[in-house]
Image (tube, rainbow, N blue to C red; front, side):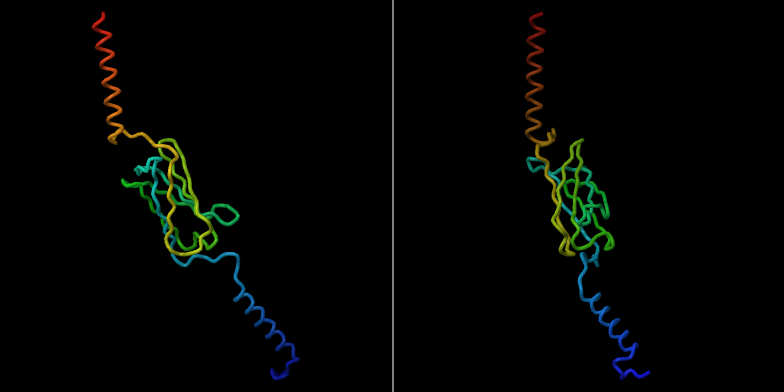
Length: 161
């Protein structure tokens, strides 16, 4: 058997194998696995823009068919920020990121479009309403006025007796 003979079965098999290998290597698939860890971070705010400390955040990596590929959880810090890091095997180009925040029994979420890069990505979450906190100046004034009104009503009520 000579390899110079282009009609030989060995040369044909070799040529077909090389062509098939070239097609597999050059044709892109539907997705591309990440080669670096995927850092996702963001902030959680109420409707007034106040950062929410202690909110539980669940971050899902969703495949294009919307099934969950990976999940990590975190809690927000004093300034309302959170951060999670997914391993390279946990995400692919084309997946989406979904962040869900739970705070005092309320839940809000936000998601991204398809992942197109390996750089860190932001996913911020805002609640549609203001969550009252008595630590703010407005909460303090409201509570003080309410307590003062109750005290005046009680004094008037007991003086009439």
